[in-house]
Amino acid sequence: MDEQQQQQVKPIWYFVGLILMIMGGIIFCTGIYLYFHPSMNPTVLAETHPNLWWGSIMILFGFIMYRVSK
Amino acid sequence: MEAIGLSVIDWLIILIYFAFVIGIGFYLRRYTKSHEDFFLAGRKNSSWVAGLAFLSANLGALELLGMTGNTFKYGMYVAHFYWIGAIPAMVFLGVYMMPFYYSSKIHSIPGYLKLRFDEKTRVLNGIAFAIMTLLVSGINLYAMALVLHTFLGWNWDVSMWISAITVAVYVGLSGLMSAIFTEIIQFFLIWFGLFLVSVLGLIEIGSVNEILARLNQFSPDISLTTLWSSSADPMKNGMHVHWAGIVLGLGFVLSFGYWTTDFLVVQRAFSAKDLRSARMTPILASFFKMALPFIVILAGLIAIVLSIDPKSGFHLLQDGGQINYDSALPMLIARYYPPGLVGLGVTALLAGFMAGQAGNISAFNTVWTYDIYKAVLNRNASDSHLLWMGRVSTIVGVAISLITAYWAKSFPSIMDYMQAIFSWVNAPLFATMLLGMFLWWITPNGAFWGLITGMLSSFLMYLAVKFEWIPQSLITLSSVQSDMAANFWRAWWAWLICAVVTVAVSLLTKKKPKEELVGLVKGLTPQTLDANIPFVKKPEFYALISLAVFVLLNIWFW
Image 1 (tube, chains in turn brown, red):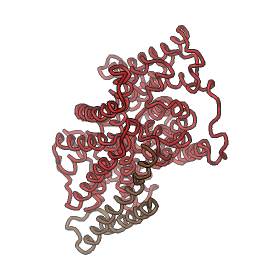
Image 2 (tube, chains in turn brown, blue):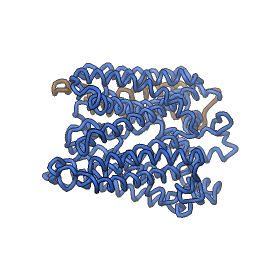
Image 3 (cartoon, rainbow over the protein chains, first blue to last red):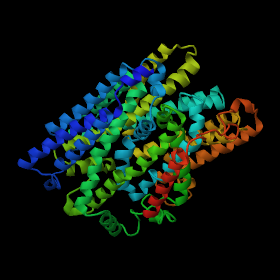
Image 4 (tube, rainbow over the protein chains, first blue to last red):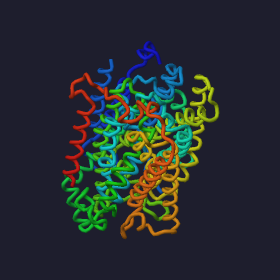
């Protein structure tokens, strides 16, 4: 791969940031839905709403990586 | 076995992941013009990229399902695989061995054997490595199918074929470059997808100390919570192994054999942009390796604590009346993860297996193309022909992995299967490499016959114990038995036999002239490494920090 081509390839951190933001966003939105419509068969510790806080952490981390890669 | 089941949101997350990795394969195809791009990712990567890929290539089925399942079976002793079974060897690779590998501009480990010894040693190792790689690749397919089977209730055959085709597409399109890109994405998905299991387990049980206390109460005579204090008597630890077996078999032979000679992981360091980055690759990876027990070992211990508490309702799956230890992690995900997070957890597991399998396949296509095809079958192959052969061997390698996956399925635990294979191939190879890299008078014939004797003796020991031709205690030097102890000790004997034969034959056969060994053997190579950079930027400085953390962790969980 020559230098010109190498410059055109987006850095890996761009892709990592992108997929974490997308997946984190979906998980966060699911968490909002489950907050208002709790499942009939809740998982253990469902009352801590892990989708909300874990989804937020993923979005934040993904955003930082995405920005850094820019 | 009843499937756990997924919601539409979980499916969406899994589909996004598959679309993403295949999309990256197509994206990078535009930049894969030469065989150097395909097999070595153009030698342009930073130490961070190469380091994370180095670790991710190892983060396959074994590290996730296998190690969590083994923790359920053996207790905390499994952490030895992450600490003494990895860190000293990774640091040794970065500090001492990488300069010889990287500076000789080889494409593969067998390539080094050709330069240091001769063509026949290279081809022998190339064939052994190719076979081993396909056997290990099968494990990843099997594990991926286990997850799809457990969560979705899919048929084994359909699960394996879908997984295999996905890896064949993205590795076939862009070789090592797309393997590395997806490995790094997989590294982050594994952490985000699986660390939450440990977090939620800790919230439910209370604390790490509470987990250890409950395990000690459950098993007061056989320790499940210590690393070394119960290792003097094999009867007193869950793995039934003596500390000498851990140190010699795992810490020395298996660990150094895997981390310093297994091309699957070392290939990632070869993709680094310069020698310092290549040396930093395994050293940076060692820090992340040390952190992995906080996913897998902790999850395994949480699974034991929950399973001994009848009120928890937690149990492992059973297959044909036998406990399926490898189901520990999927069952924890099903326990804790609501919709959405289940999709992330399943994706993390699939990502791990695909990273492991892609690593095996990209290493296989390189060794096949350079060390078998070009070395023996078509010496005058052009650049474009080699690139074509790399793509063809990727597809063929995946197809053969499908066959080996069915064999892996017949083993009670994938970890036992893996260690058996490593003790056949990697253990003797490490003796050859160590002697060849540090003693100039080791001869090509010494290396060749040492390698053959070491591999055959390890395989024969395996067969002799399996078919009860000899008692296992003859190998393990102990009346207490476990498959893992037998693997450690067999690796040690294979290494010793290879080393003794290599030295003995070398004393009787013709040596290579010293001038042909400059740059390949320590003592004949000028010491010019990183002479002009400050100590705090040298790989040796980070190696010392890594070793210090390693020592502290072992003391903490003594």
